[in-house]
Image (tube, rainbow, N blue to C red; front, side, top):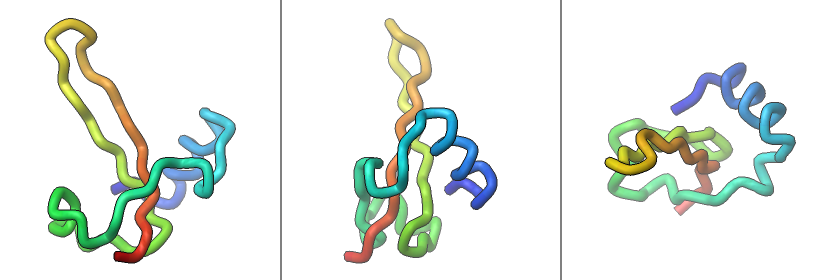
Length: 63
């Protein structure tokens, strides 16, 4: 989970708003251990043998 400052930096870097980010539910088993709140920005890291690390960002919604 990103800090508010880091989340704002990501939004500025990619020139998007929270409304434009893909969504993830707060009850998603993959993030429940983070105890996320609505509107938090989550950074997901995926490893790939060909492309290396890829980063994805999701905004938390209720559910």
